[in-house]
Length: 424
Length: 153
Image (cartoon, rainbow over all chains, first blue to last red):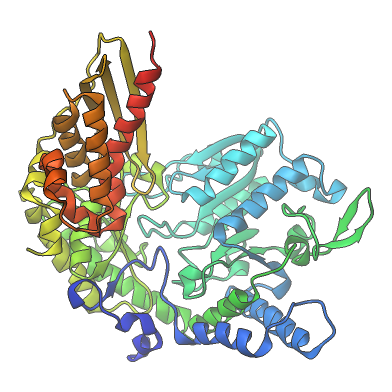
């Protein structure tokens, strides 16, 4: 069980919204609210330790560097990695782009022999899935275009589940990269990571995991998952905006060329050429958002302190209440698996389509009841197309989401068809 | 009337349910322009075609899908501007744009005269996220006129 008074850690949750109604925040899949420890960590950094990190020979610089690297160790420990396997990025999108662009640069000859293993060209293949967020699709489309490689994808079934029947035909000796999400941001389905990783390893493909919707909600251990790269988003895991992280196996990060070039990332610079530092420094050119990084470290510690097994149990519970409730409303369709058995593979959210009512209109009625949800395609147009809809309405939970929140959502959702005169 | 009811006035609900001007019409006019607009947050799209007969907006038809606000808005647009001369159509566009920026303030009598049924959208102005929905068809109309005026075929 999570602590009963946990909500007190989140100052924003006490505010009211439309017409003085209490806030029911069910948009954590888009961005999570922040506990006081995260806000305090950022403020404390600025008020007591602010200095440029990894340079300067004064006390403040030492303290700032210690906090900066301490946060790296905290985030690494949170996902079972070594500190030097965590690279700070602007967000999770930037983390995925770092890998894709690095491979593109390797393909252009940057990085010399050590980066040759990342070179792609005509005849090579990149495999994604039909359930990817645009952030884990578009960079691979671009890499395919840059290198002449071919993009392929694992299809999903009517419930949004990856179809693995043709896995051996889609992921072959030609496949160089297999990129996929850990948890779908639309269906909440947890991907069959082990099956996918085993196949990728069998054919020598690099694996890139989108951890945006998993790292904040369930225990993630990169060694146990045996993946090569993983993207993380701080603001979805109770941390600040403007910061994310890439996990990469050390030996891979040390060979992957950077995609942003500049100071801080280099070893020796002459007028002709440059050699880079080892990871993670080679990817961290330019000034870093240190306060946000410190905040991300605090968020990882906070979640770790709650216990991710407890967090997972809570979020499965909330998702189950929402999904069961939604299933009872006539004219409302749940995207993703339906029924108790299938619910085992789902975490943290319920995404719905109300027959005959546009998601924006659904969201407006919920908003009027003080309920914040996400409407639209959630940066995932291909999956919505697969489901035959343009958009949907998503209620997503986090550690602070209560059973009452879930019930308020169901209650307000049930009024939507009548409001728009589409009751059956 | 709650803000929600003020936003979804009956006029809007009616237009959303039975939208006017839907279905692109082939035009045998000198100046024809078309515009395709997408609301990137929700993926809603609209394709709107305008036919000009000298200085008259002779035809406004469209196809697409979207929320009740965007569908009702383009339906009302069709009702208002088809048959207007360009000067009046531009005044209508300007009045609607001003209505969207009025943060829910009712328009004055002159403006209301120009806006007709479109006055019902006054409540949308209170919701910044929905102004884009209401403007989608109007953006397409504005662009389609520009395209039509270029058309010398």
